[in-house]
Length: 226
Ligand code: MG
Ligand code: ZN
Image 1 (cartoon, rainbow, N blue to C red):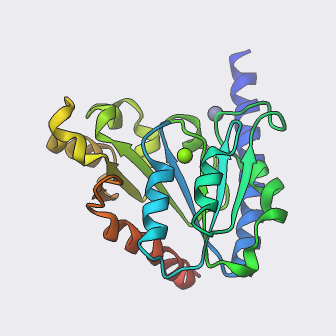
Image 2 (image 1 turned 60 degrees about the horizontal axis):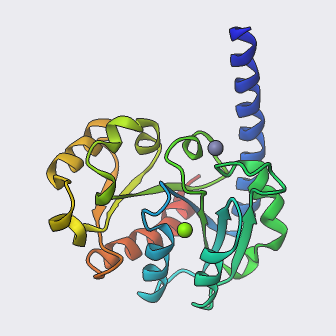
């Protein structure tokens, strides 16, 4: 029984990997670098995207908004005159709590790949399963807000380990929340010593320039990839 369950899960991940490679080939053909942006609900994925766009990204950016339902975040991005595509997991994908390669593939005909250099895929807010599914991205970034507490890297290590960038958001709240920033950063380093770590505030603008620069560097890094 147990072994069967493991095999089913492994087969599903293999199938995901095959579709992720197909997505990647389409992105490469179009010369589009792709970021998979992940976090718990409410950490500030959309707000930080808004700030980066307002800060003047050099890249022509497009956004694929993953949500269980609704288009609240896509509406916010569209106000900034950036091409945005809504991908809802309900009802088409059973209300899944993450995006996988097949869901992204289904949305690709609606993404104007010829008009952009950088596609940011805002994943469904969730610290667990989004980390298990590659979607064809070049880089993975996660947002972790100080309001979530300093223990999250230790409790959800896969998510923190899966990312090249960890963006610690809401640092303006540090005086008001029980979070020791040094301990949080040490916990991030303990599970992912190779991650680039930024401390930012979507509210005050602190650190936003470094976040914008990181996003703009993704197309350059992907262009040098073999
Ligand atoms: Mg959002
Ligand atoms: Zn899920």
